[in-house]
Length: 158
Image (cartoon, rainbow, N blue to C red; front, side, top):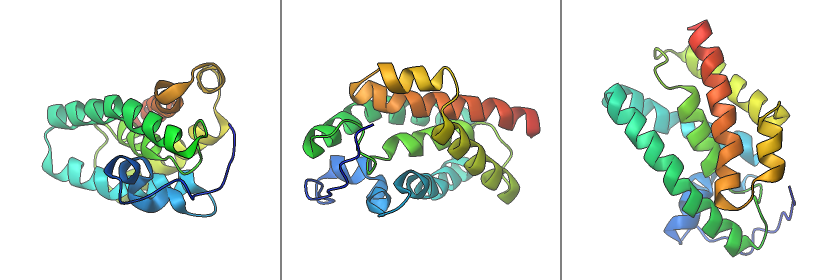
């Protein structure tokens, strides 16, 4: 992953970039992926409290599909594939991690840690997707896979 840390090409006034940057959380100077995942927690809480399981699933799928476009447009604007500030993929990955997990602070903390571990260390096949698949689809795919792996562990734990 190329790491051009210049934020000059990003603007929160652009709705697509606002989403891609995780409502601004991706602009954190250190660990933007972690801050993007933190930004996912209130999104998750709202969805878990107010949506039935089927609606949660449909909305998460819609966010993942929209993420292909959102992340590609932001990457194009930055001129860097998978710029660290692009964290929409972390938001979606965390929502996948938490799918059908009973709501509790312990589950949120565990899901956060598991998702970050899978996202950072990228075990096989996540690492293959991260290296071989490009564009908006590639930006989303490794985090969707990290979320799926974390979801499996969450389901076993909870």
